[in-house]
Image 1 (cartoon, rainbow over the protein chains, first blue to last red):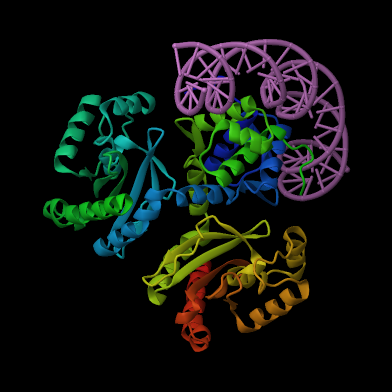
Image 2: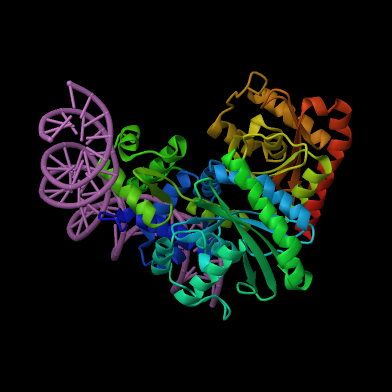
Length: 251
Length: 251
DNA sequence: GGAGGCTGTTCTGGTCTCCAGAACGTTTAT
DNA sequence: ATAAACGTTCTGGAGACCAGAACAGCCTCC
């Protein structure tokens, strides 16, 4: 897992990118101080990134460019799972009028592939590409519930069980109990665990070999979703969408 | 513009990323040959990128990870123009039933920020993040028509006037004539210039200071769009959408 | 079955390059 | 005016990147 001979110069470039992402547009000096590097080094990295479209300069400020979106968009587009699920997520958003989401697991984290807003949908601070801990969302738990137990332990080891809110899962035992329940029921729910007042229902998508490919969810404010809705019509719509994706992937 | 002291190691990393994007999942040896580098160097770069989530490994193959989408998605989300235009593009897709697009200029190229499919929409090979030459699309020409003449010349100089199809603009004179017409009319059209049988109508979005922020378009197969539609109802819908975005941006 | 051809990975040290720090040219603030 | 910030350029010595060789697995094929 850990590189035997890491390329330190590349690591500096990546640190610079992260710093720019956190700070937004800013100057050379500020970046150099934040990264504990000399101004000239930061400047050299910035101009190099700029020549390749990864960084932009306006006036005396530098910021990230859309080249990352090009590479990321291309990567996403080449994923069969995304291609197949895209239209289904949109339909789900239209049918429910709420926010529909698509998540995959990567390196022990959940990555949102897309979100689609229905006409009543709440506007969360999620976006395509955002990473989350798997144990803190319904989408993530739906995936964890369909991974081998050993892999789940690996992920706990690697990423920990960060408690984002008082209600989120904090121990291995709690998590495995929750995953058992999800497997039995076929879908996961999140009742304000990530965000107060937000309810969420998520279903896994599995390949013909039983491997989990990702998960699909609908998020809605608790005020609009009763328990009967959640476990009734909403569950049916989400499960049905997941099923359609499964069928289309496996032909 | 050109870096005085480029960081060569970073340039190698970026070349590796591009190579992975072009080839898709592949092994160390193949990459090393394609890049004319030693296997060990490629391996070191790959493991470094992997530790930061930019590259994934499955079996003996390496491929790009979704970290690029995270950075790119974050960059896009932090653009006011995107935030404001997103819902309007979706509405436009629903109203017309066709494919609606959002483009911005960056470093002399057009970058698609998003596309939204209506229920009849054709499925083009565009995706969020894709770069195109500005002079080859209606979206790009709508932007060029609202840039200072000197900037347009800079862009021609930097990017050239690549002729993607026999119908696309090939000389500076042709381009400036086309831009004059667009300024007069208020919107740009593309009648099969980029793709045979595809018609496209695009309008610029300008800030209160008159600076062009990007452009909005609808693409549809020629079989569904008569000349009267194109310059009538469709033009009105696109111009109206652009106008709404302008109003929302300038408050 | 074992030899030979592929992989990806590790190791090494000589060469190339990255970068701290100093100096410069501008702009802003006092 | 003066000072203090900024971004940019320059330099050479310390340091790291990488070609090439060697290793450890796979396969395939007589």
